[in-house]
Amino acid sequence: MDETMVSVFRNFNEINYLIIFFIVVASWLLIEFVERVFPWFAGNVPERFRFKILPLVPVLRLIIWIVSIIWIVPMIIHPTPENLLALLGAVGLGVGFAFKDYVSSLAAGIVAIYERPYRPGDWVEIDGAYGEVKSLEARVLRMVTLDDTLVSIPHKKIWDSNIYNANDAKRELLCVANFYLNPTHDAQLVRQKLYDVALTSPFVQLKNPIRVSVAEKPWGTHYRLKAYPIEGRDQNLFTSDLTVRGKAALLKMGIELAVIPFASSERGRMQ
Image (cartoon, rainbow, N blue to C red; front, side, top):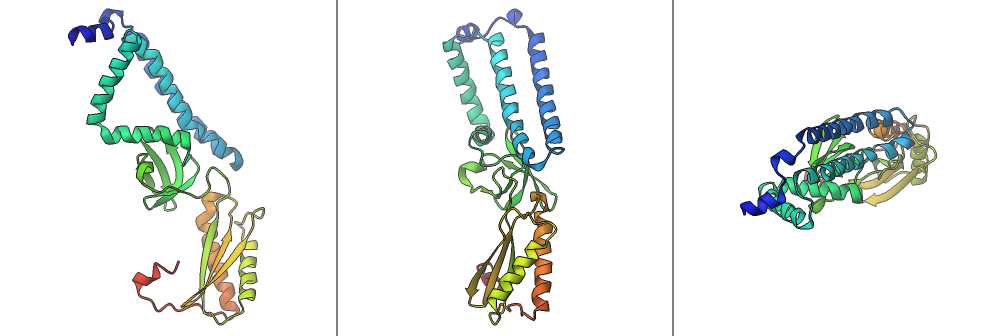
């Protein structure tokens, strides 16, 4: 075993520790530069460019680390195919047992960069947490919720959780305001009034369609007012604006809101 290890690794006096140190430091500084400058730049350009710049951060970080490892490994071992396989096997076996969940998240992070179920700038929901993806780290993604809370979620969630992506690297993000009304009213008139409410909102993106869907329920009529805000970050303000102004307009028309007699356990199913 000792002879095998000696044949794999170079002698200590053959290894240039100073160059290795400089490679590690340079890689770290370059990654810090990418993680700081690119988001700053993305925040100071038009929104349509933001979704093209932010996804470059995790890709560039991965490339920097791969190049650094490829550069350093031949300085430490004799770069023969046998030695590389032996080293990878030993490291993989040890790390796999000791850090199974950590390695799973790292592997899922690489898959996430390739398959892109989420990118920086996307609005996603994972395990009940909904927010804007701010960064993709090696092990976790970090998102900021509508309540301005930072949430860190391991990438390994992509193995067994549903990922809901509201905009998928696009500027457009659909918002929905719900209205529950007494069924005794003119539905065509209500649809037009809700459409006008969205059309006159200061947050609406007019190049995208505004739709009002209607569904009859045992307790009344359910209206869903669907429209797109100018900025995805304004979705909370936009939905609130539609709800407040829509409710005021309906009450002014004399429309009665629905009174739902179900127990609280039943209300979750009326959506």
